[in-house]
Image 1: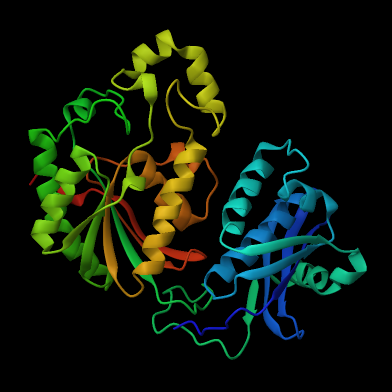
Image 2: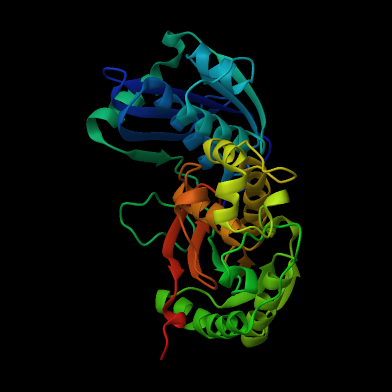
Length: 377
């Protein structure tokens, strides 16, 4: 288990390197305590990227590492005034790609009592050297020797060793409804359709598939089932919980994104009658349907729900019955991917995804949208 380090002040030094800007890029991170004792050194080769991109990836990597520890009082020191001002919200971010990184870093910063400091380049020489080491020699992670490793480790020999006991999440999209079968939009507000006969059949099949799937991967049995409060997810969760003999827990944060006035419409109608609003929504994760919710708002609540599940169920397996967009949120967290994950991954009704999270900084993906149980026998 992760050792308790108390409330020690931690200093994080981050630097990005890009030979050509853009060009071959990497970040270096040095983490130490007030006495100068090294906590960890991190580095990752990022391929062809800008220096600004590398700086942000270093900050994100440092924060993800620290989420698996008890350190919560952190000073982040950077020699990039641009990044300090952007992260502080005083300067605007023009690049859509960098905006996504700012959003991700800001989400992680919320878990800490943090201070951002600009320092001159000569005061950031260790992180600079680590970034160049990653450029020349590839990825690395070295941690304080006194950290105790988790009893369960990632299966890939290339994956960093972990100090946090993992939590397995089995994410299941709800079964079909009449709206699903008619290809109508059904969000977290408006009508609350129940499972159709097809959906009930899908739920039964999914319930029977989860235990064999976990057994195949050598993962723990299900301890409980968390679900969105909507009718279609509640019905699906009840079938799964009954089959597995697990308790049910409702979580409001697992609701589908709210589509507002678009609820109940077909895509054909939406494309025809609301093309301008639809184009705006598609072009920005911060845009909202009329009376609805933005992808950014959805991401905040879903990823906070996931963070709480991971922290509160170490060593256990939890089934999460939710909707299309929240399912994409869990996939995004596991893959550490960009906001694009909220529209480029699809999940079939009762598609099953299995992730093993070591805190929120690292996850293994065992399967995404497994549909073997839906194949007609």
